[in-house]
Length: 469
Image (cartoon, rainbow, N blue to C red; front, side, top):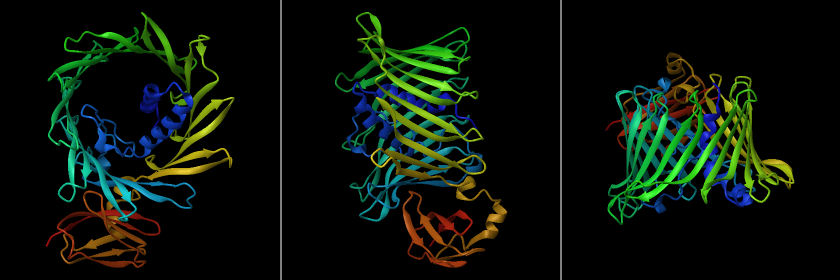
């Protein structure tokens, strides 16, 4: 399992489009935002989104809907995230994400909740649902946020996106509808049209948005891609229109320079000004023999000296374990000298699946790393230790199931913790019995599906429980 350059492309693109002219502002704002997006991806400003703003990024603690996870078929796993507040001495709960899969192992529902310290419970935040074509491609995704003020709490729509494909399975069209907190009705938002060259590589993407003032579709951006004779990407253009006719003007472009002998990749961003292309910034990547990024150097263009700025810079550094898995991602800033800013450490299970991410901030005054946040991922095979299902049933049994008034948990080792969650991720029950057998009184519980996580000394197992009255 290797991580190629394209695996960190979202991070690079974020830096590309959000780097500010003041590098200190960029370092102060962009780096924390990137790390928070990588670990949490939970919107805290959902009620203030404009009509034509689309949220289409999946948080990194959610599964990729385009991938198939057969081991998680018909299961739900839970990712727990924590923060380390300033001057704290222990982790505090931050959020959880529940990912539910269908019988084929496709992600169908991802629900995020944040920890409410006043209520001492997880409260819903956002959720994203996916529907698939017969070929396993995403056909419709719907993004919603939790509105606690409506009917005692309800999911309010934010956007939904329809995807259409041609007979070769290539994405050719998307249509996005939006709604707002004040007006939950669906409204036209945007359209995208995709074309491809004879080698099935993306050729153009034309973006239109619904102009609510003119009540008509306006052309906005056109993305164009240029390849060399070996079909390697050479340049990408972003042209700007903002009219009914689709009359575009040059806006920005990115030049890709890849040296396979030196294992380097340079991405130069330019903007069009006074009939000429002007350098803006670039990201210079060094790769290892497996094509993984070792470092990415970000520099702004110095127009006065016509050189890349070497006074204020930023760089990302990547380290891998012996299996080629990302072990550490570190950011540094340069002003007179290189200084650490943030780093994320990665731990894995024996099968190579992600176990934990830990983000730390460098405290220059104390000359040490300070904890910032961490996420703990479920163990393979739906939060178990990857053990055989037959052996799992021997380790833990719960009966009756479906249950009515009570359910009895019986384990081969002492149960240290029992946590019960409903289908929207709320923790409805928790106990620390310390015995091999434990009885849950369920007569007052609502009917429906629940997930029980039982932890012992050496195992953590999650099972489904159905309550019927």
